[in-house]
Image (cartoon, rainbow, N blue to C red; front, side):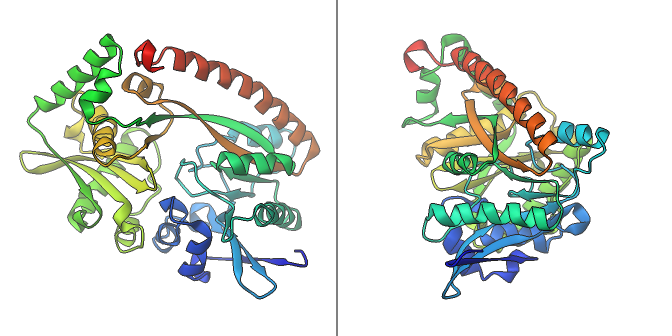
Length: 385
């Protein structure tokens, strides 16, 4: 690629030694660690037949040392990404173009902000070389576009200067200023919202459920067996698609990120009823997937298991942030406030590129306005805003 670094493409994360990959990924975000990505591939949750063909990019220096990597996939659809470009694909098809396949730099099925251009020595030049290598790969392979989803803000800044179209998104996150307990958090809320949260928690407490939080090795195969059934049943009820195979969770449990698992476990009369799957990384707890048995559709249980138990865990473990996943304006009333996310897009066709650039510029203005209004109407007392 240059006189100092050379790019190569590998067909599996297992083609890179875990130590080398993780030296580039760092320890702060479990989703870009080798173990998490390998569990996705080894379980066949991520594979060519699921529309996620691994084509990871690796940079080596003149001595052959791996100095940067990026999780990269050739996509034949837009499922499992959470930055929606279906409209772009449809518009391009109507104009006679072919949008798929495309190139996606992402963590599959994981709408979590984190590093995507992974540099062993934290060098912007290596991150830029990864981005330029993706564009070169797309051009050589005649792919329509390159999409880097949920990068850090600093990466989005770099990609924008490199000519990528920057797109803004919104999620709902909770920040911990140092609450001593859940009542401290409640004290920061306006009276009406405080009463609402208390009432929801009391509603769940009155149902006679047993709710525990399991961490790392506390999560056994029997828990994953039940959770995966719940996950599939919940997806079926929502007309969605179950992306993660049962084997993925077994592989996750023996990976180097196994200790990051935080599972909120709900039983009724000794029988599993529901669970919320979270991952812990650095100073953030990431809410990932919720599942329940058909009988688990009880009033306020989703709020308790997915939101309030996550806050309890974060407060007791002095974790600074909880990210509760994609979408959901209802989270604002429960203390999860609008937070910007980013993506970056390179599009080969000049006409489509101009149209997308115009679209995201308009979208960004509307999103800023909406986030400002939601923040102003948030649940916190005026002195806390």
